[in-house]
Length: 152
Length: 152
DNA sequence: TGCACAAAGACAATATATTGACATAAAAAG
DNA sequence: CTTTTTATGTCAATATATTGTCTTTGTGCA
Image (cartoon, rainbow over all chains, first blue to last red; front, side, top):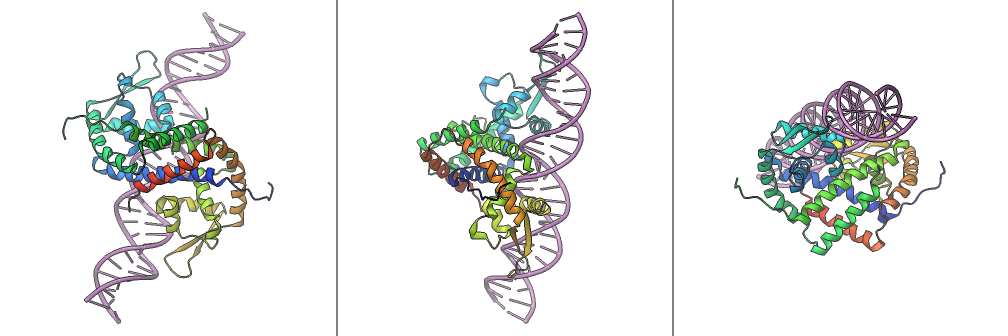
């Protein structure tokens, strides 16, 4: 390897570093906010994914992995915990023997309601100081970077 | 708890969810890009923190935790690996017996150079489609949200 | 000066993130 | 139709994330 020192674009590296920091802080403070329910932010995202009306009939593990951008193995372990807690159900897919349908249970809907009650305030505070337009731009940038970094 | 269904602000929750997804994708694809060096994105951020001229004399573990927004325990384990690999050194602080000074070794500087050579391209691709102004706004939003969510 | 409290870094336990591997089922190819 | 290849979800291993805890050291206050 050459001895020439590489200078990274400072703005580029700062974006990635900020993502790293912000994600860490998000999980830490989010989990703290939800600690009374014993729920992590990651579990919230799993439950939230299942609560959408368009997936009322359930989601496959694979679909969830794609949606959440987590690995199959990680999701499987998270689902173990959520199933054990009675919040989700794994049902055999009727069309494909290899596949499962994951659905929210009634208890899952209830805890999600409790979660959202807490997260409402948490989320509001997290975006303080950003206008609605800022927020929408922010989503656009995040989405763009996410897609740019996505490898198949 | 009341039975009334809570409706989250869709923009707010999407910001948090995008952060979650983007962070996952960032670590996965970053680690893939750096796989030939056997370095993770997290280790890169540790090494990067130590390479700044203003911390030439080293950083305490505590300072690094604050800078990186990771826990002391997590950083300690990461430093174990980086020290074992010969990239960082833990030296006793001369003023405070409880404290350590963490410094980059010469090998640490070399691997960091190799890392940055790879990350240069990775970072460039990750921000494709965002103007310089977009990138600067992005940093501003990330910083704002990070600070809003930071609890002491 | 002595005591109470806090800070520093590391050990322990647990949850989440990845890749690798596997058995079963489905799809594709010839 | 048969064989090869791919897909699905889970087990295994490892790295990173957290909180809790501990011992040693340092600080502040009476």
